[in-house]
Image 1: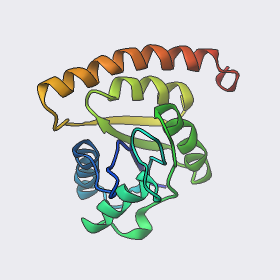
Image 2 (image 1 turned 180 degrees about the vertical axis):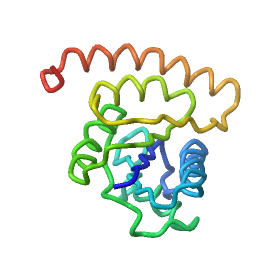
Image 3 (image 1 turned 90 degrees about the vertical axis):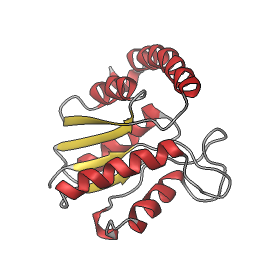
Image 4 (image 1 turned 90 degrees about the horizontal axis):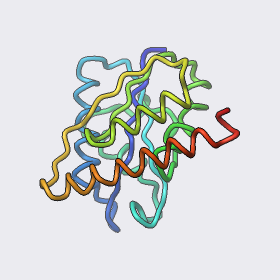
Length: 168
């Protein structure tokens, strides 16, 4: 199999409209597909109070966006209905194994990539990974808030991974 692009979810509103960060991630996936149209895609994102309270998964909204922008339905693998970044990794890993993927491209926002790398490298050390950061269309104030959250979240997730019997 050629490479698999994993588009990490962010959030949508109550009408299923993707956030600017979600759109930026999808746009980067479209750019990657322009140069490698044989890649498959996994979209992540399920349901949660802070990112999606609709009846459809966040991954479905990402998929619909990508299809509206020219991606063929047969390029998609199964969605991963994750609630947070560790689940992005733990729920995509079985899909990657099932499809015998050996190379993946993981797309997330620029401020999020360090934590994504920490988690995906820990959960799937034997898979060849490339991390692509989507530029964050956020105000300076919002970007600072997101970066501060990531510092806390990286520490929390590092402790979670090290303490989990699933990964040791």
